[in-house]
Length: 353
Image 1 (cartoon, rainbow, N blue to C red):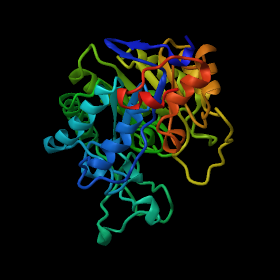
Image 2: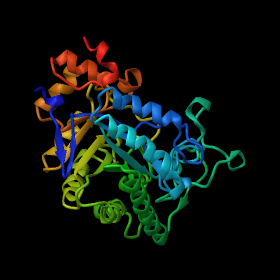
Image 3: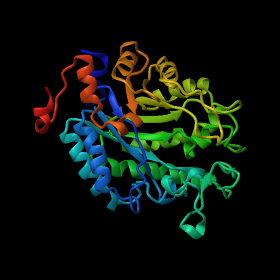
């Protein structure tokens, strides 16, 4: 069996293959509620053979959304439509996960196809928050600098959202600490200029994330996995680095985190990233050396490329985003390309050969 189509068991959860749908914002919710778009979007990827499907960045508070169109899980009423989606994903044999997030200073933005700029308060925008009162773009309004009590309250809100995710039936929860959103803002010295116990040293800048992990792990069943997504480097001198990520990976492994989802960038505007196929894979490979499982993401677009990453031990799972937007049935085609047998939905069997 090809590496890409070997199962991966984490705690009590077995993912049937190593192909995961990376969390991709759809900007299509109303008041944080999932709807038919989300069901069809993610359901079709489950039908298409993905082993793991991670729901997009889901706000733990209304103000934690990137846009007014982002999903949320800050109230119990938002559970039911997510459960409907989770049930369908599981019926197809895939595993459903969800990414819990707070956008921090990068919140309160318009939908991307409407320009994506930060919304004014008069346009339905809201006050953003951050570790320090430093905007992402100079033209953005200043974010509110969080107090220590507000930081601790937010950690509890991540846990409350995780409880709701459990009720909805998710088997994996991922904490979003990447792409310049709130938890990443605390990690990076570029955005965290605090002088209290949440800023300055590596230990202090990682404190908030570790508190969130602790709170989430305390309400998430021991038999179910917790992932963390990080930006493994800021790609900026003086920012968060690969060495920081490796050090953090070792700590997270000992705090009950099962897999590090390794992306990069997003915390500084105008950064030139050396884009090439698999350009972020090396960060997953470095993290794996600490003993934690690691996921690779970033310009992985072919079955052969993804398969080699697993066979060569560079990553434990491959998370794909844009390729899944282009082709919901990528895994079915990848299996054929690699000469592997994979289950097709009964309704589609007539097209298998």
